[in-house]
Image (cartoon, helix red, strand yellow):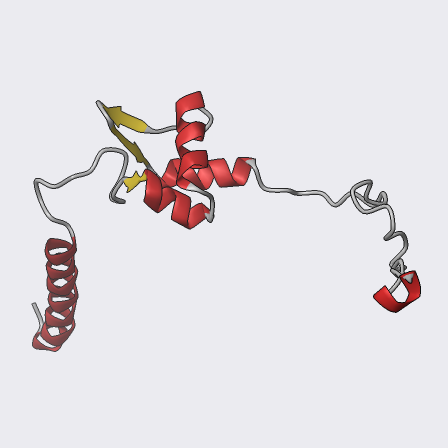
Length: 120
C-alpha cells in the first residue's frame, strides 16, 4: 500500500468508528421494543398527542378502531398505529356547499343580531 493512501484509509476508519460508537450509544441491546424502536404510548399519552379526551381514545381502542397492544388492564398504542389512524381520518376535501350548521353565513355575509337596546 502506498504511503499517500494511508491518510485516506485512516479517515475512512475514523468515520466507521464514529458510526459504530453512535450505534452503540443509541441502541440499547436487550431492550428491543416490538414493532420498531419507538416506545409504546399509554392511552393518556396518545390522547394528549391527538388532543382528545382519554375516554375517547380508550373507546377507540375498545371498539378496535385504533389498534393497540393489551396485556390485562394495560393498553398501549404503537406510534406507527397512531400515525396511520390519523392519516385515515385526515379530512382531505373541502365541501364548497354552504354550511347547514350555520345557515346565517352564506357567501361570507354575516347576519346582524339585534342589540339589547333595539330589542326593548
